[in-house]
Image (cartoon, rainbow, N blue to C red; front, side, top):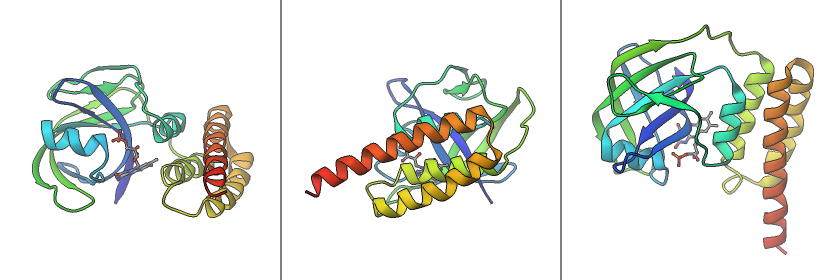
Length: 190
Ligand SMILES: Cc1cc2nc3c(=O)[nH]c(=O)nc-3n(C[C@H](O)[C@H](O)[C@H](O)COP(=O)(O)O)c2cc1C
């Protein structure tokens, strides 16, 4: 099973990076699969540690999907890294095996520490819809933009039915970004 998280990694120079990532879940072992061009891939290869932050606030996923963003964070306990200040819970992990040759890397990790801060209330339909919208927002240069805009219309219906304010804001942020991308692509295409 793949669990969506905000993954924090740190560069060799000590700069923290925050990225939404799906993590292949296990209690004591996890696998992270970042594409080679991501900062997450570079940091994992260079420093071999990460923090898997579990968080129910989809606005964070939306923000991190469309921009390089720094969230409030505190030092991790057992690995050189940071924990999201708003995380419900987290796993601190160390890479034990890595395959860095393919376009999509594979980092098998061992859980070295678990932390808990607050209850994970759960995901509802709107939150799932925002997650899907966030993933699509990271693929505007890979998938046909008309397809993405159509999917956004469908996801917006779900958000309108079941969202709270935070999910509405997250969807609005993503919609603004995707429309801007569509305009740029249209202009470039003549
Ligand atoms: C919910 C979600 C899950 C994602 N999972 C992955 C993943 O498993 N691997 C990956 O390379 N990108 C994934 N992405 C896309 C990355 O978040 C995106 O490419 C991001 O810009 C990478 O950030 P970085 O360059 O700071 O590491 C995911 C995005 C979202 C919204």
